[in-house]
Length: 462
Image 1 (tube, rainbow, N blue to C red):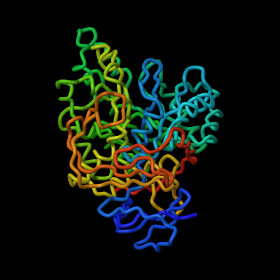
Image 2: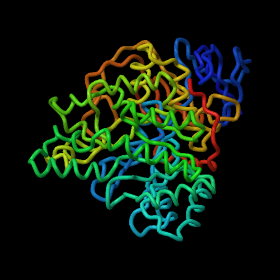
Image 3: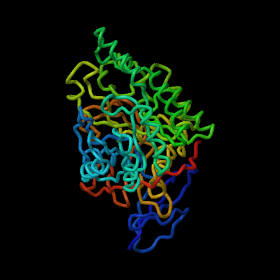
Image 4: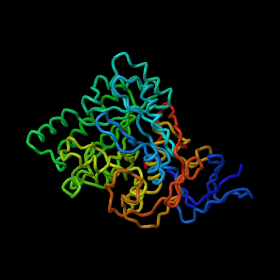
C-alpha cells in the first residue's frame, strides 16, 4: 500500500515546533522526519507555509443534546461536519443516563445516535442516578471505554447529585480506573439568586448572569476538591469561568492532588457586558459570562499552565429556540463553538502572543488525549498514532460570519470577530474529511474510540 507524505510544513507538538515531514499509511502515522524518503508510489501533500497540527480533540461537546427539557436542532451528521471544518477530528460527547436507565442503555442509545458522524468520537457518561448498592454498575462504563463520569452539583432535580452520593461515586470510580468530571455550581446559591430575580420581576435575558453568581461556582469547586481529596480520587472541573476557580484547582494540584480543569473560549473572550448588548440571548449558558476583568484573570492562568484543556461546551440551539421566550429562566443554555475553537485559540492566544504553538497543541490535543484515555492513538503526531492531522494556514485574516459555518444555530457568538488563519485540510485516519472550504466525507465514517481506564497522566503544563 502506498504512503502519503505531508511535506514542507511546520510540525507542532506540545514539546516543539519543527520543520518535518509526516508520513502515514493505512490510516496510521509511520514516520515524522526532517526529510522522509519518497518512493515512486507515494502521494505528496504540499504543506509549505502551513502548520501541521495533530487533529484537535474537543473534550466537551453536546451534539444532538437532549436535556429532558430542551433539544438542540442538530444531529451527529451536522455536529461532526462542524468539527471537520474546524480541524476537530475527535469530539468527546456525553451518554446521558436518563431517569430509570442503566448505564448500558445510556451508552447504547448514544452510540446509536452517533452513527452518522464523519469524525471519530469518544464519550463521557453523565451519571444522574447512583443509589446505594449501584457501585458495581460503574464497571460497565470502564469496560465499554467510558472512563470519565460527569456529575452535576446543580440542576436539581434532573441532574443534581448530593455530596454523599458524590463522595461514594468518587471513591468507587477511583478504585476501578474512572475519572469524575464535574459541573460545579452551588445549587442552593443559584436557586436563591434565581428565585429573587423572578420574585422581583427581573427575568429578561440581561439578568441571566446574576442568577448564577461566580461565588456559586467557586464554592462548589472548593467543595468538590475537598470531597475528591477525601475519596483519594482524581477530579476534572469543566468550563471554569473565573480565576479563583482555576486557582483552587491549581493549588490542589500543587499540593499533590490529582486535579485538573478546563476553560472555554467564551470565558476568555467575553465579559458580562454581552448581556447589555443587542443580543443577550446569544450568551445564555451555564455557567454564565463573568464580569469585566475576569477573562484577563483566566487568560493569565492559561498562560501560566494552570488550565489543562480548552474545550467548547458547544450546544447548537437555533435562534428560534433562543428567542421563543424572553425570560432567561425559559431560554435554553448553550452556544455553538466547535468549528471556531482552533481559529479563536490560535488568534487570541498564539497570534496575540499570549501562548505558544506548543501550548495550543497541549491544551487542544495532547492533554485531552491523555486525560480521557485516548493517548497516543489520538492527539499526537507520532508513529503508531492515527493519521488525524490538520493543516492550518496562519496567514489569512477573516471575520467570523455564521453564514460561513456549518451549524444550524443561525448565529455565532463570535460573529464579527477577527480571526487569523484558517483550516485548509482536515484528515481523519488518513482520509480527507475537509479541504479548502468543502466537506468531503460521507455520513457514518466516524468511529467510536474507547478510552482506556484512567491513570494519572504526566501532563506538560507549560
